[in-house]
Image 1 (cartoon, rainbow over the protein chains, first blue to last red):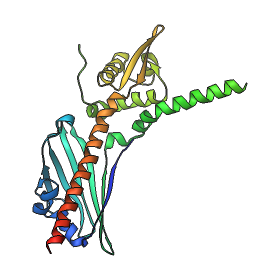
Image 2 (spheres, each protein chain N blue to C red; image 1 turned 180 degrees about the horizontal axis):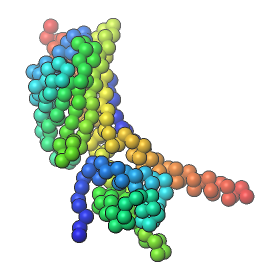
Image 3 (cartoon, rainbow over the protein chains, first blue to last red; image 1 turned 90 degrees about the horizontal axis):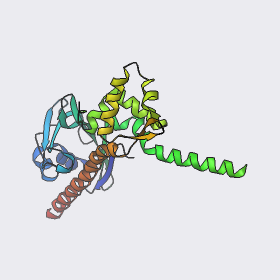
Image 4 (cartoon, chains in turn brown, orange; image 1 turned 120 degrees about the horizontal axis):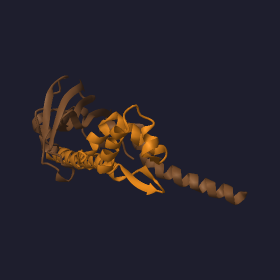
Amino acid sequence: MQKEIKHIFFFPHPAEIVWDYLTKPELLAQWLMENDIQPIIGHKFQFRSKPALTIEFDGICYCEILEAVPFKQLSYSWKCSPTDNGYKIDTVVMWTLTAKDNGTELNLLQTGFKEIENDLFYMAMNNGWAKNIEKLLQNLNSNSK
Amino acid sequence: MTPQILDAFQVIADPSRRQILTLLSKDSLTINSLAENFDMSRPAVSKHIKILYGAGFISIQDIGRERYCMLKQDGFNELQDWINYFDKFWITKLKKLEVILNNKSKQK
């Protein structure tokens, strides 16, 4: 069961260019979504895209810059679907840029799918297996007796 | 009284309901034995069980004279759907960025 999202991409371009495409609203909008980002800690902004009806997502992400180290690291909160007491999705998106010989490696990490991240979810998913193994052991034990 | 309809996120936002699920992740339990783990009244526990049942997190089976609660996959799926959605979302978007940047270098 997946609890966080991770992707690594490589671009044959200097980190400065990749950074621009992460932090300049008009460049970011070309590939991600309409936005009013500014890479300043504490800046609040939104991404807006088409709603996704299957998960009742209205297409708006509420964000705030948490970290901005030019050409190296950018992170912001990423919240969707407001409820009476918070947001359904209350996560953090972190971009890490690493300069390589011929370009830039871009790491994306989205974490904090909070409720899911606790042990419960893990147990729920593994519960079935644990029971099967238990049964298998019981069978093996009773056979060997 | 009909139990409230809550989405998966609201359902597991409640600590008592999370505890019920945690207890059930170890073993299927009767409503009575679940209630023993809580300070609240049995009707209050029943109400949480109804909510969990309504959202597909647990199933209830009558075995003999007892009603047993057990974990069910369905409730957890909504949470996973969101993760899957964003996972695909990022791949699609980052590929788009790749195309844009590649075109940019060709123009030079």
